[in-house]
Image (tube, rainbow, N blue to C red; front, side, top):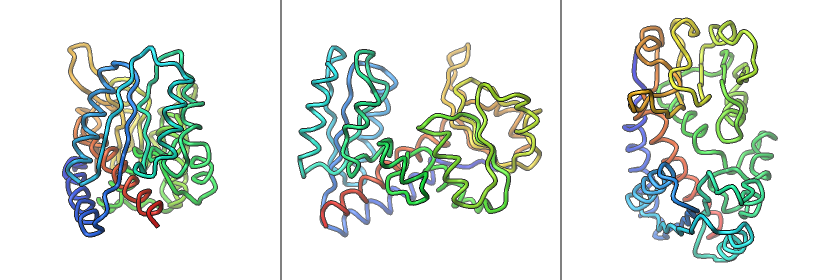
Length: 278
C-alpha cells in the first residue's frame, strides 16, 4: 500500500500557480459569498482565503447574515457578475433553507463560475468539452495523473451521484477511456460491483462505509468522505485500517482529496482571469 499525499501535491501545484501569477503581473480576483454561520463552511472559506493569498490571488469573503433573502443574494451576485475586478465568484454551499441553491448557481456568470456548478459548465463537461469543472473531481484526476495511475481500459466504480462529485467524476474518468459504473444508495449488490473496480472513488457521506470485503486487492482507492465518528474523530467514507491492507494506492482523511479541491479551485480562478483579461 502506498499513500496518495494530497497535501504534498497541493503544495507543489500551488507553488507553480504562484509562479504563474507572479510572471503574468496581473492579479486574479476571487469573491467568496458566505451566507450564515455554518461552522464547516467557515473553515472551508478560511482555507480558500489562505491558499489564494499564498498564490497571489486577491480574495475577499462577503459574509451575509443567515436571514438574507434569495432576492438579496441574487442582486448581490448580479453586481459582481458585472464587476470586471472579480474573475471568479463562489457561493459557499449549503445555503439557508429560504434560498433555492439551484437558482443561485444558475445566476453566477458561467465565465466566473470557478466551482463549475453552472448548468452550462455541467453541460460542457457532459458534452466532452469542459471549461470549468467541479474542483474535487478535477483534483482527483490530477492525483491519478501524478501517481501514474493508468485509467484507459480500466474498470472504475464511483459511489455517490451528486453533481458536485459523483456525476462529474464519472464523466472525467470516461473521458480518459475508463469503463465506469456509477453506484449510489439504491444500488443492489454493491459489494459485487465494487470488488471488480481497479479504481474506486467513494463519495457517499457515510463514515467508514467501504470495508475490505468490498475492495479488489491492488485497487486504487480514493476517499472523498469527511465525517466524524462516534468519538468525534475525523474519518472518511472508507475504513482506512482494513482497506489500506489491500489497496495499491489510497488517499488518507484528512490530507488526501481536501487540499487538492482547494488547489484546483485556485487553478480555475487563474484560468478564468486569463480568459477575461484577454
